Structure formats: C-alpha cells, structure tokens
Amino acid sequence: MPAWLSQLLPILLLLAAIAVVTRRLPTIELGHSAEFRRRRFFNWFPLGLTYAFLYMGRYNLSANASALDAMRLVSKQEFGNIDGWGSAVYGVAFLLNGPLADRWGGRVTIALAAGGSALMNALMGAAVRLAQGGQLGHDATITALTALFAGNMYFQSFGAVSIVKVNAPWFHVRERGMLGGVFGILISLGLYFAYDWSRAIARLLPMPWVFHAPALLLLAFVVLDLLVIRDTPGQAGFQDFDTADASSGDTGERLGPVEVARRMSSQKVIWIIVAIEFCSGFLRNAVMKWYLIFADKTGLEGFVSTHWGVLLCIAGILGGVFAGFISDHVFDSRRGPVASVLYAGLLLGAIVVLFTLSLPVAGWTVVLMSLCVIGVHGMLSGTASMDFGGRKNAGIATGIIDGFVYLGTAAQSFLYAVILPSGDAASSPARWTPWPLAMLPVAAVGLALSTRLWNARPARHGATG
Figure 1 (tube, one colour):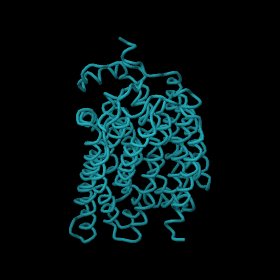
Figure 2 (cartoon, rainbow, N blue to C red):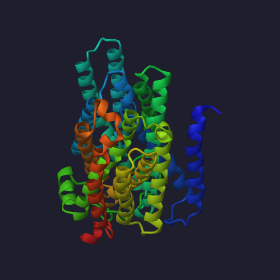
Figure 3 (cartoon, rainbow, N blue to C red):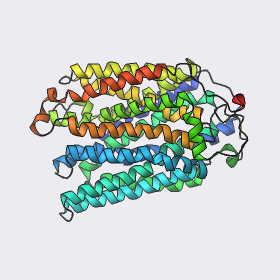
Figure 4 (cartoon, rainbow, N blue to C red):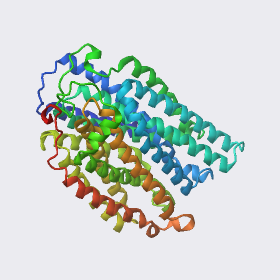
C-alpha cells in the first residue's frame, strides 16, 4: 500500500463510520424533501472543500516553518512575526469583508477567497524560489513573505464569512449543530492537507511547490464554486423557508453594516462569544502552530509529530461531530454547554502538558486539545454566528466572531515569538515551560465565559418587535 494511502485510509474509515452512525441517529424532521437535501449537499460540499483547501494555503507556512528555518530562510522569531501580522490582518479584515459577504453573497466571496489566496500563494512560492537562488536577500525575503502572507490572510478572511453566509439560508437552527460538526470536519481535512500533504510536497519537490500546489487547487475550486453554489434555496429553484434564527420575522430591507454591528454589540451574548473565540484563536494556534516546532527543536519527534496532520484531522473530525451531536441531541441546540465541556478539556490539557513536556504523553495531550478547540470553533464561529446574526446578517456576524479568533491568533504569535526559547536553549524541554503556561489562564477564562452561555438562544426579530 502506498504511504500516502496508508495515512489517508484511517481518515476515510473514520468518515465512513461517522456517516453510518449519523444516518442512524434520530432525525430532526423539518419537512425537507429528498430532492432538497440532495441539492443542499451539492451546495455545501464543494463550498466546504474549498474551505479545506484554503486551510492548506493558510497553514502551509506553519507546517514547513522548521524546514524554512533549517534552510536559513525564516527563523522561529521571524515566522512568529510573519504569522502575527497575517493573523492581525485577518482579524480586522472583517470590518470590510463581513459587509461585503452580506452585500455580494457567499458564492461570490468564496470565489474571491480562493482566487486571492491562490495568487498570494503563487507569489510566496516565487519569493522562496528567488531567495533559494540568491536573487532575493534575507531582509527582502522576510519583507516579501510578511506582505504576501498578510495579503493571503486578507483573502482567507472571506472564507469563514462565505461558508456561513451560504449555509445560513439552507439550514434551520435545529439542524445547525451537526452542521457545526461538519464545519469542524472540513477544518480538520484542511489541516491534514496543510500539515501532511504540504510536508510531503516539501520532501518530494522544491520548497516553492508547498505554495504552488494549493494555488492550483484553489483555482480549480473557483471555477467549480461559481458553477455549482447558490446563495439561497430560492436561487436553486426551491422554496426559501424560515430558519428560526435572529432574522426570523424580519421582512424589511437588509440593514447597513454599522446598524448591524450596533445591534449585535447591544447583545451581551455576542460579547461573550467574541471573548471566548479570542481565547479559542489563541489556544488553537498555540497548539497547532508550535507543537511541531517544539518537537523538532527538542528532538522529541515521534509518532505524533510524524503523523501530525492525520492526528489533527482525526481529532478535529471527532471533536466537530461530538460537539454537533451533543448540541442538537443532548442540549436542545444550545451552543454554550458544548463550549463549556470542551473548554474544560482544554484547561485540563494545558495542565497536563505543563507537567509532561519531556514525555510522549504531551504530544497525545495536545492532540486531545486540538479535538476540543476545533469543536468549540465549529460551534461558535460556524454555528452560533448564524444563530445570533441571522441569515440576513450572517456575513457581518461571522466576520466579527471569526475576526476575534484571529486577533487571539495574532496575540499568541507575537507573544510566543518573544517568550519561547531560541538557539541552543530551545533543545531543552524544560525551557519550553512558557508554552503551556501561557495557555492556562486563557483556557480558564474561556471556560468561565462559556458557562455564561449555558442557556443562550437567538432572539427572533418578530418576537422582539
């Protein structure tokens, strides 16, 4: 069996098992016809695959940070700063891209996301090629990669708002928990593509192909998305329906972004969600982006680091499906209890890693933490943003919530670039204590805030006057 198939096989078997189990779960009957469900699948599936390959074009730099360091192209601190600026751009881009998604529709903006990211990745590959050939000095290389990665992250920020904007009119609130699970699965597949595929590409082909490969894939999905995706059931020849979210009962014109932001900011629950997602962004990338660097620098490489992409994918799939299942089938489509359960796992995981840095159990613990944080992210950015923003304002709502995820990401990137060891000191696991130590207060705050959402539900427009 080829090596690539032996790695992919566990993911395919897991997805097949999940498909069988979910089909046998009690269905939430909302009167959708089989034809509608089939067309809805062909709407969200290519959209979701586009999002997964966007992840490949986003985390490919992180996946190959150690290789770029070994080639003396990008040091650990330089990677942290490049990633920090890119994450900050992503975090504030929602001010423009959320309203654009609501105005233009998710079909157009997912094409913008894929096309723009393809262009930036192609240019990053060109910059690496010039740097390897000595035609671009070190400082110029870092400047170019910083600017291009920031541009990539600007276009990437269309991704989450687009996927939520398209799906909101197609899914009732009672169906969105499992949709959040699917969102987590797609994130997980994207991480697998980024960490395992791109590292395999780096071993087999020149380093620039780490960036060129996702660029080509994304260009193919631009064409597919424009041909297949429709923003609403009505555009696909079906009847639009009441999704029972915050837009329910609202028959007026779509509000402007300032008014939407004002209304959302008046809801206490939105402020709690964005604060939790700031914590999620910090924790998610503290684990995903720094574990491989930790394992490489300390020499503690093993099964977890070698199969990091596969393990992240499996953990994320399980986390997303678990979160979606307990939200819809245990907690009556409430998102707060799910976030509380998963944040408790994150806090426990950070404590375990703190005391086991030199042991193999630390690697397995961060895999468990990835399961938890992907589940939370799917529930809040992928589902709660639809619920509390409503289908009319899903773009702005998702932009605000996902924007804070990446402000949290930027915070951890800049912080870890400074506090983590470098040089010979990085070879000692004991010197990496600041890594889990910084996660502890963030996980504790996230857990405390999640409990505040325990009974939160979206208020319908018609119900509130």
